[in-house]
Length: 452
Image (tube, rainbow, N blue to C red):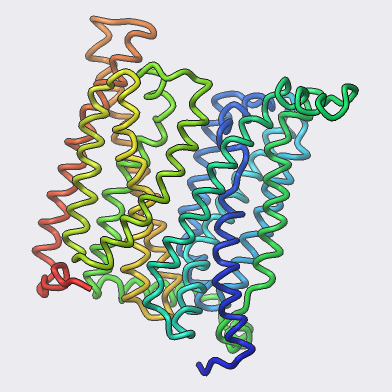
C-alpha cells in the first residue's frame, strides 16, 4: 500500500490510538477491590464463583471467532465493538441495585458475559492493526520499541488506577477529601461503592471514542465483509489453524507462552492469600499490586533487549529460569521477604505477552494475523484453566492427607503452603514435555538458535 501524506498521519494516529486504547481498556479502577465489590453489592460467594465461570467460558468461546472476524471485517470494527461492549459491561454494574435480588444477579451475569465478549474481541485485533500500520509505514522493525513504550504507559496507568480505585472505595477517605473543599459535602456508602465502577465507565467511553478515530488499512474489507457468508469466519479459522500447525516455530511460541503464563497467572490468582500468609498487612495489598505493575516497565525493557539481541531458545531459557527461581522462593513462604520472589511469577505475564507478540507478528501474514493472535489468547486461557484444575485437585488431595494432623485455619494455611511447593515441579514437567515435543516435531531447529 502506498503511503501518502494524509494516510501517513492516519497510520501514525493508529499507533498513538493503539497505546491510548491499551491504557484506557486496562484502567479498571475496581481491580483492587474486585471480589469485595461483588460481595458488597449483595452477591454470595457461590454466585461470584458462577459468574467467574461464565466469564471464562465467554472468553474461550468467543476468542478465536473474534480474531477471525477481525481479519475478515476489519480490525477497527472489532475494536469499536469491544469498546462499545465494555461501555455496556460497566453500565450494567453502575445501575445495578445494591442488595441480594434476582435482578442484581442477572445484571452481573450480563456484565460477565459482556466482559468476556469484549476481551475476546479486543484480543489480537489491536495488535494486528498497530503492527500492520507500522508495516505500511516501513517501520516493522520498531515493533519491539512500540511494545516497550506501550507497556510503560499501561504500567503507569495501572499503578495510578490501583491506588485511586482502592481510595475511591473507602467512604471515610472520600468524605474526608470532600470535606477539605466543603464541610457539608459527603457521599453515602451506597454511592461510594459505585465510584470505582463509574470511573471505569468513563474510561470505557473514552476508549470507544479512541477506537472510532482509528483507520482501517484496507478499505476493501468493508465491501468484502458484506459479501462474506456465515461460514467465512470458520474458513478463516481453519486456514489460520492449518498455517499455525505447519509453521512449527509459531506453534512452539504459543505453547511456550501457555506453559510460562499458566503457572505465573495461577499464582497471581492466589497472590492475596500468599501475601496474608507471609504477614503483609491487608492495607498494603493495593500498594503491592501497584508496585508489581511498575515492574512491567523493567520487564518490557528487558524483554526488548532479549528479543533484539538473543535467540528465541535463549530467551525461553531465561524466562524459565526467572520463573523457576520465583516459584522455588515462593514455596518457602518467607515472612515479608517472600514478596520479592512473587515478582518472578508476576513478571511472566508481561514478558510472555511481549515476546510472544513480537515473534508471532514477525512471522505471520497480515491476512491471518488477528486469528493467529487469537490462538495465542485462547491457549493462555486454556493453560490457566488446566493449571486451575490441577491446583484444585492438588489442594483436595493434600487437605485429605493433612486433615489428620491439622484443622480449621491452620489446615488451610498448611495446605496452601504445601501446594506452593508443587508449582516448581509442575512447571519443570511442562518445560521437559515442551522441549521434547519441539525436538521431535521441528526438523529445522536452527530457527531457535537464530539471533536477530
